[in-house]
Image (cartoon, rainbow, N blue to C red; front, side):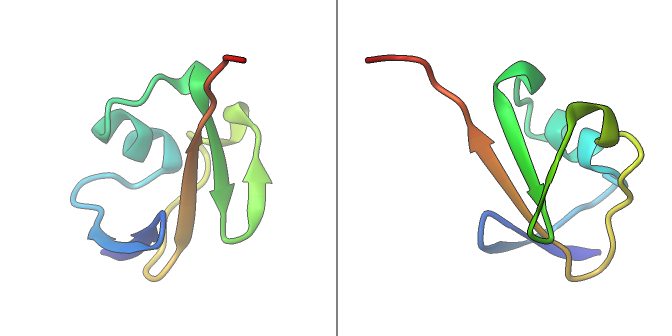
Length: 66
């Protein structure tokens, strides 16, 4: 299935949920914010949110600093 991740078209391969997509990219969940089709998701929603053809997902890495 094809989705848009951070503006780029990608194949999800075997990732069926947001949580699986985060695992695929080996992102630390505690430092990632997710926007799914324009809606910010809570971390507890990631395993339940199924990906569908043409979805738009944005991953934002949170970085502390000054």
